[in-house]
Length: 373
Image (tube, rainbow, N blue to C red; front, side):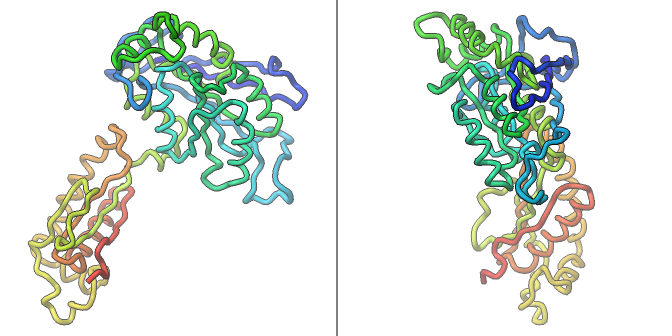
């Protein structure tokens, strides 16, 4: 894969789009087997993965340059309130590129790391959408807008749309997703679909027509991602690496206590059975208490085999977590059951979550049936 990054020069309000300069940096491609090599920006490529979502896709490699506030930028809300930062501080990403390049995979990866994603947005609405997201604040300050040539409202003047955003004080990053023609053809053929611009012609004709429409957009991209040699998981991982905070890319473990008499949790990835331990329900002084309380916790964890049980499953989760992360899984539910979900499962869940946190995993305990009896 080849990734080229371009950082357009800041445009003053009266500048024309042609005034923007560009600098490019090539990043070595990562092939499907994990090796690093040198790949040309254009040409033919091998190694494709059948598309996911509504378009064929594979995976990227890129390194965008973060956009900070421009010197002298005063476009903040009245009073300089830190809760209402300048538009230039808003994290705004524009995703475009060729059909079959992997835009839908990029969009899902951005959602995974906390972006509010607007798909198939007409370019005429980009400025209005940016203003709405800015006014909404909160999570909407991380917004990605995905442009698709298949939209009837698609315009080739992305340069002008980005210029308007910059004039209003926004600092958008433009991501262009590309792939070699031969790879795109194989991806479309693998799902037996025609190219949106193919018409009555050949698949290659549609690809060529789209490249002509998107030529200016490709030239002004801040991040150019060639997915020719990337599979879906590699593309997702690369986007998350580029745009996600470290915590957003980590596996998050929920240790969920439950009572078997109320049914299994349908979202459980692992199910642990704590009913081999003595039930505190039959201890009069503990019956009315729960596993979150120290006395019950000491009783449950003090039983033969309890500590080994917690440590064994902590070891299993620690050993599988890196693989889950590589495969794109972001949430893992470990269900711990006892009869009613009040004593043993609650105490074990609290202990297991604490043990996982000690191992530097993101983990918390939750109790589905506590208080249900």
